[in-house]
Image (tube, rainbow, N blue to C red; front, side, top):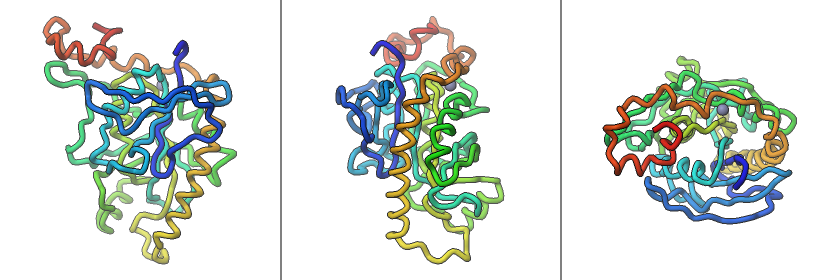
Length: 287
Ligand SMILES: [Zn+2]
């Protein structure tokens, strides 16, 4: 691939991209294991897109089982420079209604350590900054792409990333509300951390499906109702991807491609040949 392309990671229900002119389907093996599925590479509105369904086609991996490292590594390997992430979330605020989209700008991590969330280990240490955990320039594209398509778009919001797969208790949900959380999900912060380490731009479009369990006056949500909202959200997401592909060439330049510059801690001469080989894709520029 000659130019840097746009990666799309799809969440629940988003397993294909409307109008994508398919060029290739790539099954990759990475030094970190196998990605969730084959990557679909294609063209849309003049842009090269690389698509991966986060949970695998047919939704086979739960949030703790997803191999996030392999998924992000594969994107980098295929020449992706930016990843737009789509996911279903619970709303923690009355003003974020079902079917609304939140362009997430902050995260709180409540995962419990089952998942691998760094590429840098086994003799190689890096500490990248997560003060601003998403790419502001790509988030701007996400907002522009969504604003005329989704019922309502919230330009910022805090995403709490829980382990799952069970949903929160009401006590937890109320605690998170007291922390100022806007939406709750199970996947995106792990991706954001790894994308930053891989020096990729990353932005999250969080699609609200329901009011988690904090809202006592809400009539009991049926699975049928939630599924209908998810179905509508997937259709909105497909339209947003069309818009994003058109807008992507206008993305401003940002700091993400230099995230490791200050972050690599280990003396390069002390990194073993094995680790150096494993991380070669990331170190090429730095070591
Ligand atoms: Zn960026």
